[in-house]
Image (cartoon, rainbow, N blue to C red):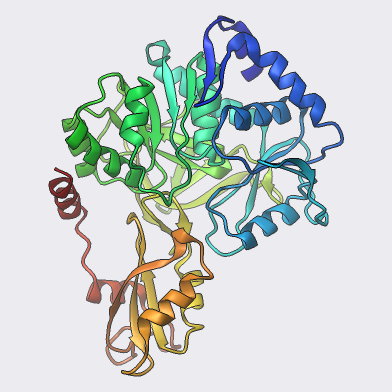
Length: 456
């Protein structure tokens, strides 16, 4: 489906463009074939490149050659990358130094038909690998093209790392299927300030892009300073909860923002608001190929598309762990998460228990609760082991063993958690909700207002 669509586009139209290369649709077949030839003897390919035309070409070559591809997220730690290489049995890795044998042991057995293994950002130190067939990714790309229509065919600017499934599938595959020009910016990772995102979108005359909430906030601040972006027709925002007030603020600045919802297990996008079908506060309507239902308030996906996690079989019905509602008009709303997993505004999934356990290795910290859902960084409520404890030093040391997206940037010292004050269970477990209610306040509307005031 994807490669047939590429062949049918005007061969002279620009398909891929970055700071150093420009390729037309007519150039793609030879470029992909050359890389397919170079992949002879590769059983599983890892891609550890920065955003570039080359990244896309190698990815497409592996897809066409039916060689499983494993993108390496630029925000992974060395330990997480090692886990990725071993568990997915990556035989060769492509880095700026070229293609080389990894020399790693072969641990995981990938399911038949695996085209891509996408790893979550790591709710723990050892993230799961989601095995996807080509058909699942093509279904998502095709559905996006169908619901947006031809009027949105233009220039898509890749702002997120290509190793992120959302950009890889919903951005590149959908864009190529529709006949867009894919402009690949040099912006990398989620740890940057994205100080040039407005410049990139303006200079490329991008008509569409995909952002996470934190980058949207950055873009809004830049628009307030540098002016509007009249070429933009569609900005998809997902990866974390988006407050309706933020969407309204963005639209008031002439930014065409539409919220969506996705899962790696569904090959990225599950639902999406569009100019034709939009409901503020929802994550849009389900893509045409998605079948979902709400059971006991939890969103369940029938035949989600993935082939299972590495070493595990695929479920017929996938329990998302997300709580939601489907209204009579088919709009899906996310009301919460079944478990404690936090999703930062950079779209990174973090288990608070993982970070808390790391912090508790420091003798200065007696008790801790980590929070930061929909925020750009993690915060912690900390009980000191003694009044003289060097808490800043302890946090700095703990952060050294955590990736940037899981590091604690802000902390607050609080009284001990006890059974008597209702912050501990009888078995000694922290009552997370009670503690957060007692010691934190979270008013996203006020934060958005303050952010924009500061940006102005």
